[in-house]
Each structure stands twice: as structure tokens, then as C-alpha cells.
Image (cartoon, rainbow, N blue to C red; front, side, top):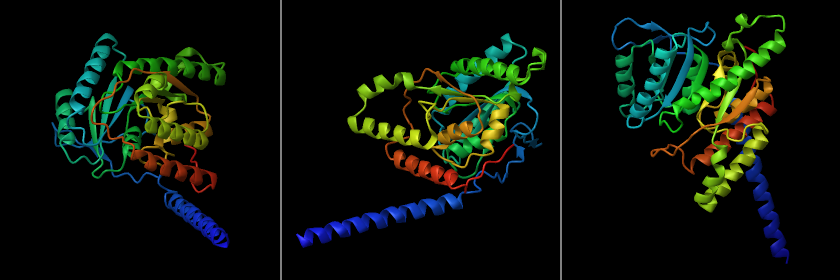
Amino acid sequence: MDFLVTVAEFGLWLLLIVFFGFLSVVVFEAWRRRNSNVSVDTVTTLEDPKSIKPIPCPHITDPAEKYLSLIVPAYNEELRLPAALEETMDYLQDRASRDKSFSFEVVIVDDGSVDGTKRVAFDFVRKHTVDNIRVIPLGKNQGKGEAIRKGMLHSRGQLLLMLDADGATKVTDLEKLENQITAVAREEYSIRNPASKDMDFRIGDVQVSAFGSRAHLEEKALATRKWYRNFLMKGFHLVVLLAAGPGIRDTQCGFKMFTRAAARRLFTNVHLKRWCFDVELVYLCKRFNIPMVEISVKWSEIPGSKVSMLSIPNMLWELALMSVGYRTGMWKIHQV
């Protein structure tokens, strides 16, 4: 009996040592990343493959020059990127031909690809001109979150849409997000500026965010996925709820739209660089009281996804960093 008590005590002490050891590592890493939202920008010019003259790189603090910017993060997407870009450009050009006030740009952020992604992207620049498609090469892989952040910080639109390079969400669904953002922005503007006229309204100046959602597909997904995948995903959703709070059911859908004012405030504060930056965006929206709307979008599984079950431990690690970073005050909020 004494032996069993000794073993139990040893096990308890071992668990405590592991727990406090892990907590110490999380606290240290959160402290190390306390300034990771401070952009040390090396992107000052953009390359035009048709000219030797460099193009000055815009910044989110500059006035908007386009109505819509589409930010596409790409890591080793040589095979999937062409079809998605063709579909996107067909939609954008058709809309521009019907509406002369509609202007756009597509910003492809090459996140250190080692295949032909950069070549494919510049082929589209040559075809559609650097005014409509731009490429930002990051040099080395920094993560999807950082790729999107860089694209957002160097876009020219009043509205900024992030979408995945695989074309899993139909680009036409951006109109659903656009319509909801416009409605909420007008309401917010009229509340804050009751004496202003409608002609003074500029959608890019009002802070609103719209999150594309696959939550309506969850019941079907639960029925077709293995039980352990459902268990892990439910556990992940619970951790997200604890870290960022309620409000958005599907934080991980790669189809999100922001007004320029909202993007300026959010993406100058994001610390996480990889998978869980989406959760941090929800957290920051709540901290800044930026209205959020969640809209169902069409989504289809495209072969070649970079997400696997091994991604979940990395996501949980980032969520732990976020919770510790903000709750201890190590991660500061900058008012922009």
C-alpha cells in the first residue's frame, strides 16, 4: 500500500513539473513574440515583369485607390493557383465591364514557395498588367497568417478580401460578404454621423468585418468524417471558444472581408503568423468593438490541402500563446 502511495505521489509531482514546465515555455515564447506585430517592412517596391522600373509599394495607411482588393496567400500552389486565378479574373473583369465604377486588384503573396508558384503568379501579371495583379514575394516561408497580413498591409482597396489559392470558395460569394458589410457600414455611419449626408459615406472609412462560414455544412461533415477527427475538431472548437469567446462559429474559413479601416486596425496588431491568426482576428474585433457578421458560403474540398490532423497541435500551441500574451499584457494593443 505504501508503495502505491509513493508511486501516486511521484506521478503527481511529475505531472506538476510537466505542467509548470510547459507553462514556463508558453510564457517565454509569448514574451519573445511580444513585438511580432511590429512590421519591419522589406517590401518597399513591387516588380513589374514588363518594365525595369520598380513600382512604389502602397500601404494600408495610404488613401484607397481601388474599390476591392483580393489577397491570395500562396505556398507551393503551382498546380492549384492557375484555375483559381482564371475563375477570379473572369468574374472581376466581367463585373468591371458591367460597372464602370468598379475597380479591383489581386495581390498574390508568395510565402516562400519552392515550386513554380512565383512563375505562375508573374505569368498572370504579364497577362493582366501590374495594376490589376501584383505579386509580393516573402522570400522564406513565414506562415499563412503573415502572408495575409503582408498582403493586407500593402493593398489599395476600400474593401479587402482574403481568399485561399485553391478556389475552394466560389469568388462570386464575395458579393454576399460585400452586401452585408455595406449594410452594416451604412448603419454604423448613420448612427455615428446623424447629421452627415449619404454622399459623404465611404465604406472604407467604417470599421466592419465579414466572415465567410462553412458552419451550415457541419452536420454533413460530422456524418462523413472519422469519429476521432470529429472528436479533435470539437475539442479545437471548444478551445477557440475559451480563447476568443463566442460570436463566430467557423473561425477557420479562408474567406473573409474587411473594410480598409478595420483591416488597418486589425492587421497592424496581429501577432500570430500561421494557422490561428483567424482566431486572433475575432479576438481583436471584440477588443476594438468592430462589428462582425458571419455569412454562409459555398465551399468544396479541393485536393492538396496543407491542413492535416498534425496541424491541430500547432493550432493549440498558438491559441495558448495568444491567451497568455493578451491576458498577461505582454501583447500590447496599438491604436491606429
